[in-house]
Length: 281
Image: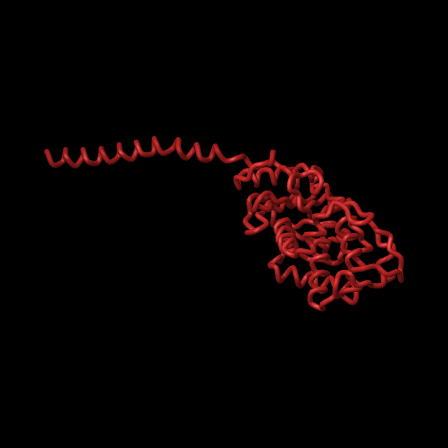
């Protein structure tokens, strides 16, 4: 009988010990989660926030769902143009002749004229800052031989980067059902582009010559480093925004988002908070 009572007492003591451990451990777990900032609610149909250095995903919303990039396509256009310049040892100060295919392209324009000379640098700034569809087309034809060949290179580069849910049919971002990406793929492309010093210099510029950057991030957001906006009626408003504070750089992508800048800023605020990066006073 004593043995039975002893065993029962041991079991009861064990159960009470476990219950006491859970009782005291639970508040600690709650305190940790309560210290973390709540993720923002964004109106974007697709969105993602990544660490620009490591590629770590900090927030995502339908990030692998098909979306239409509009002029954020030009991130890949500029990346590909700069890669071809490096591959063939062509300086961006090299002058090229504007092809007829680049004249009168629908949408945003830097008003190129067929046969005139422009440097590759001018076309890059025209495509990135002013979102010139004519500038993007000129880059494609002049560096790719023709637009179709250049677009194939864009798609090959996307595959190389692991962006298997992306397909381009033009270098401009003009809407086409067959021209699509995802927030996740676009963030990856943007991250790779920002590793190119010349691209970063272009994307971060507030002005260049007569061009003023349409991406308000570089003017409005503390530490803003770029990188590209886009809009078509069918694609909606698209934005890839980036900012650096200290050693931390974040890249936010919001697609089909009427509240594009506010949502991108909210995502980056959230990212810097969970990274422990404080705002400069």
